[in-house]
Length: 506
Image 1 (spheres, rainbow, N blue to C red):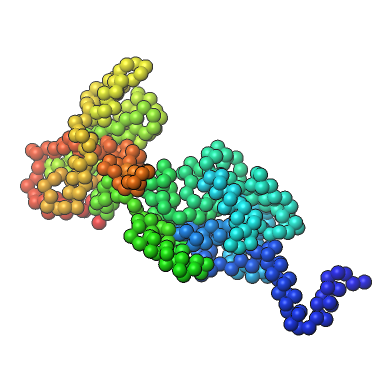
Image 2: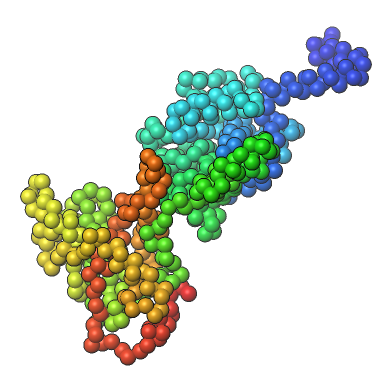
C-alpha cells in the first residue's frame, strides 16, 4: 500500500517536464518561506565576517552602518545557535554554520538583548525573528522544531531543549542575573553594567557574546562608560579573545545605488559619516590631553634619589572614588608620577590609613588636597574636609593653590613639554604600573551639548568622568613644585632627555 508521499511523487513524475520543474520550484519556494534560515546566504562582507567567529573568540563584534546587515547577521547566528548544527546539515546554509562554535550534544540557552523594550519588540522580535520584513522570519514555521512561542514573554522553546529569551537592557542589570547562557546577542550599545552581567552569565559554560551595533558611541558620548570602544581598542592591541568586523552600507547589495548616493551626499563632512556608512569608530570631540603618548610619557620605574621632593596629591570623594597620586620632582623640575591610589566608598579614616600604608617609611614633603572639597563641611560633624583628613592622620595636609580651571592649563603645559625637548616648561612622566591613571588620561574628554542648536558641539570644560587621578595631577601641576636646586647637575637639557629615554619604552 502506497503512502501519500509515494503517491505524490508518482503523480509528480507523470507531469510534463516543464510543469514538473515548476511544481518543484513551487515546493522549494514554499519550504524556503517556512524555513528561510536554511537557505540564508550572506553577502560578501557578511561571509568574511562570519568566518572570523571561531571557537577561540569570546566576544564577537559586528560594527556596521545603517542597513549594512549587521542585525540580520546577528539574528541568523542567534537562531542558528538554538537550532544546532544538525538542523543545517546538507542544507544551503551549512556552509556558514559548520565552523561556528555552536555547542553540540546539549540544549542551548540564548539571550537576545535590545536597547529598550520598543527595539526588542518591534525590530528584533517581530521583524527579524517572527514575521520578517525585507526577508522571511528567521524562526522556522515548523512545529516539529519549535514547540512553543510566547510573544508576551519573548520566549521561544525548541524541541531539542534550547530556549531563546528576549530581554530589554533598560530593565536594569538586576533582570540579567541568575542564568547560565550559551550565547548573548546584544544589539546596539547598552550600559556597561548590563554587559558585565551578561558576560558573567556566560562564564560557567564557556558561552559567547555577540555584539551588533553602529559605533556612534565613542569615548565622549552616549553610555556612561564606552566599554565597546575600550574592547575595540583592546582587540587592536592584540587581545585574542576579541574580534571585530566592519560591515559597510555602501557595499551592501540590498541598498539601491541611488539610495547609496543619497547617503553619501547626506553624510559628506559629517562626523558621524564614517560610523553610519562604514561601521568605523569616530571621535566626534577632543581629548583634553591629545598629546599624551605612552611611548614618550610612560617610563620604567627607577630608584628615586632621596633628595628629590615628593608630593602626595589627593582628590577625595564622600561617595565614589577617592584618588591620590605620588609625585617626585627632579632637579630639572620634571614631574615623575610613581604611585596611585584608587579606592571607592570608604570613610575618610580608612582612606588615610590606606594612603599612609602605601607611603611606607618614605618622606613626603608636600601633602595637598582638592581645595573645594577641603572647605566643604560635613553635615554630621560640621567639620570641613580638610579637618577630617588632618584628624585622621595627615596633619601636614593643605589645600592646593589652583586657578579658575583647577590646574587644567598648567597640566597641559607639563604634558606637552614632555615632547618638546627645548621647552622651558617643566615636564611630566608616568611610571609603568599606573593603570587607572593611563585609563583616565586616554578617556578624559571635553563635554558636548546634548540638545538644541549646539547639539554635538564641544563645550569648553571637560566631561565629569574619568578624572579622579587627573584632578590629583592637576592640583600638583598648578602649584609648580620645584626640585632641589642644590643637587642640580650641570648637564644640558639634551643630556637630561637622553637620561629619561633610557628608562622609557622608546
